[in-house]
Image 1 (cartoon, one colour):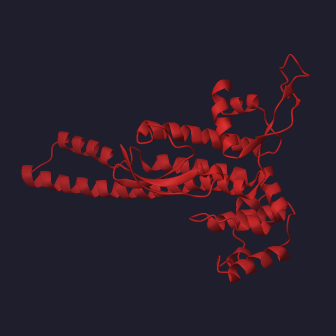
Image 2 (cartoon, helix red, strand yellow):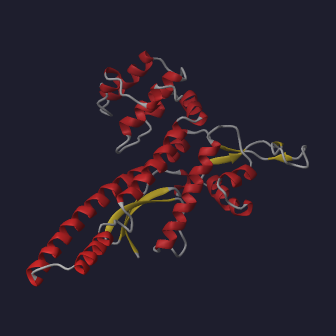
Image 3 (cartoon, helix red, strand yellow):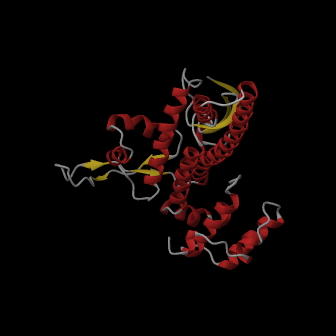
Amino acid sequence: MCIITDYILKWAPNNRLYAGFVLYNRIPISINICKVFEGDIMSGAGVNRHREKEDKKISILLLLADEKGHPQREISKHIETAFSNTNSIIRELMEDHLIYEGAPRRTTNPMSKRPRAKEIPLYIIRDLKVYRTILMNINDEIEENILNIHMASRNRELARQHIILERNGLRLKKGSITQEDYENLYKKFDEMAKYRGHEESFYEKKRDKYMAYLEKFLLSKYTEEVIREFGLDAVLRIGLTGTLDIWYMEKIIQIALNKKLADELRIKEILDAMQENGHYELPCIFSRRIPSRFENGTI
């Protein structure tokens, strides 16, 4: 059972995409919610259904980020969901003003028996607010799992200390510890060491999954066109906070350089202006070339 303690609304189209904090098993956690559940928001099953749906939304957005336009047929196949069940997910993304229907075109389905049939491609709306919403929702998942990794590590250490105390107590009480006592202690430790039912490695895999999502989105044609249309300055000032703020800026700068969207002089002017306005202390970005996969031919 989850107890809602506080909700912190973040900007999003229609105020429907937002993040909050809930108390889960007496531990405060952040949870992204694309749509308020009706009736089962308090249940673990509801949270799991939300997670699954949220992942499908992100997967759709990453597919559409190539700017080629994809019909529902391709989207359904991409997220491995029945065509009819994809309708509601696409509808929510459209109602949240994240995607739109393009002009009808001739079908791109090579298996179609009607090659002249029309299909309606879907695209991400090219807008800074839309870009920020997608970015923030992926980033929130990363930040939550970074926190969970820390909590899982802490939980394991606390469990270890508890088991040591319990083992010492058994020695004082019984004089010696049997094999059965050790087996019971190990079993108890395995259960106590888990954080919200999972070990540290579980959250590390989730963090890495969403990091891969974030990098794919930043490397997409959509991000390139957003930089081109709204300017590098606007994209750098998008307001990403937390663990990845400087990391994000480095990636965007490398994209701008590699795609020839800005030269080093212009980038330094932007960073100087941001530093003067108190946004960041950024002399390291150009004075120390931070190694990254962006410099070894990835893009």
